Length: 125
Image (cartoon, rainbow, N blue to C red; front, side, top):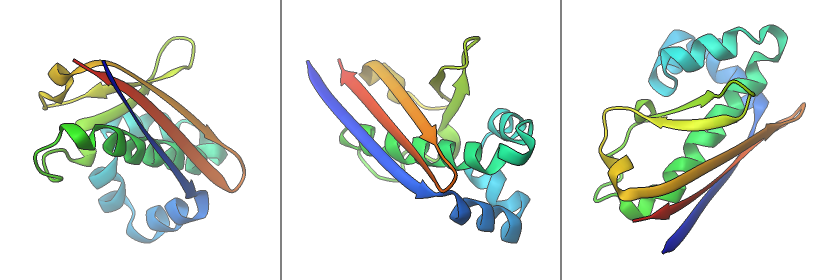
């Protein structure tokens, strides 16, 4: 069994500025409709949630980079971070067969006033 990990941290203000300056073009490039709906539902805290998902996607790409033939093989839209009924985040892959190479994958995300961070651990088949 091979275990890989990816981690990322980002300043929440960087994501807030990107959303405020670029609006929907930034959001729809990075986030899925489900992710946008979730983050927007958080009202004043939405930028923390956007930043946490951004860090999560970066951590996903870092963890699975060993499985990619080309760094453009996966886009921002191929990895969606959702929450289960208990609020725990999980990764849903869209329009990619990368999931067939993964035995197990887990994500943890967190945020505070200034930063958001994420960590992804995966095992490959």
